[in-house]
Length: 503
Ligand SMILES: Cc1cc2nc3c(=O)[nH]c(=O)nc-3n(C[C@H](O)[C@H](O)[C@H](O)COP(=O)(O)OP(=O)(O)OC[C@H]3O[C@@H](n4cnc5c(N)ncnc54)[C@H](O)[C@@H]3O)c2cc1C
Ligand code: SF4
Image (tube, rainbow, N blue to C red):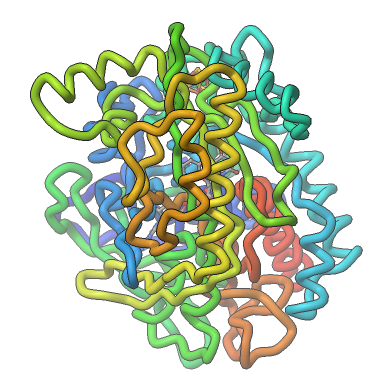
């Protein structure tokens, strides 16, 4: 087992059967499958290696050490919406809420209908992998004594309103309900890929470079022959020595929907589909303030959800326990007015509506390797989002919230139950909404037609040898449910097919 972290001066040169770029949901799932098949794998990860005991205690520290570019990537278009992702060994699985949702059957039909890949055969393969992944990652339904009051309230509200909902299934082992998943689980309970599959790859003879952003894929003609880049210091971001990893059999790109297309573009890879098909589940939070304490500091970070509206009109509802620093960004004003609002925090429960948006965008490579994400939600999607937010507010009022904080320009800071109708006439301009994007899809999508797809249904790039996509970038649609389980299983399918064809 070899782990090479930041190297200030020397040129590190390694070789392996396969190089996997990125160690998040897709990269680690693919790397572990390859290693189990007997292949020698080197994982190359832009972010640092952090053990749970080293995760920073503060939100500021986690943005600095675990998040991609301190969380500063934003959409370019009519509105500036933050795009949040992890950048560390384990990728976004380190900072996510550990929610595990199996790929809905209608997704495979949609992929087959619209992109010529998928159908029953892929569905059976993905679900078989998901069975195994659930065992490997200790997936369980959130225990009632770890749910927390915010999720209990949401579950009761949905029941009263006749809305179907469920307790989240999560990849956690003896979760303490500390509500801290978004800063990385310092208790080591969340089964992120840095704790599960990355160590397994190393134990099977693989290696990893961390603090090692790949600048480009080395091409020999139309064959992917390795990767190269320069180490980046985890704190100062100063550049260090160079690294080159040669790949005898292939390069798997799994650097996320924003970075995967950029690496391919920087490497001179040509495809009319490259960068296109970026999709998301843009989400907005509606905090509800109650007469009694809610206590967002206890419970599964996200414990309850409803997918009743996933197909029509197209949104998902869920709870989200936020720490003071993140919840406070929604509190307006300063001085004594702000202090009064902060005093409401213990009585606040934050619930989210995430839109299953049909809009699609494009990712291009920008200055300094930064992805430029051109994405605007169209009016039909904005109406869906607005409907979802109104439904979220209704749920809060059903349980006796005194007011909600809509965070929508054109509505007052506080909204009471008798003002609910004001959601119907408020602007649907994207600029008016406080949106965050954390579920990303596409950018190098799979499909049957090389003109509209970057890779085939096995993740193999059209027109190139030894080049594969193994992350969210290959998903040709969004899902309407949390994506990590689908990404992991699809990455396993890609790796399985590689082993079959290259052995
Ligand atoms: C706050 C938050 C909460 C979420 N909660 C959930 C949840 O509970 N359940 C769920 O299903 N989904 C959740 N998601 C989404 C889920 O985590 C992602 O969809 C999933 O991790 C994406 O997998 P990926 O492999 O495409 O990318 P990632 O997991 O983001 O991994 C990409 C990796 O590539 C690395 N990389 C980037 N560029 C380079 C480069 N040039 N060289 C080398 N490495 C590079 C990155 O540093 C990163 O480690 C959440 C996401 C966020 C941000
Ligand atoms: S809720 Fe707390 S203990 Fe449970 S997985 Fe998340 S951070 Fe870890």
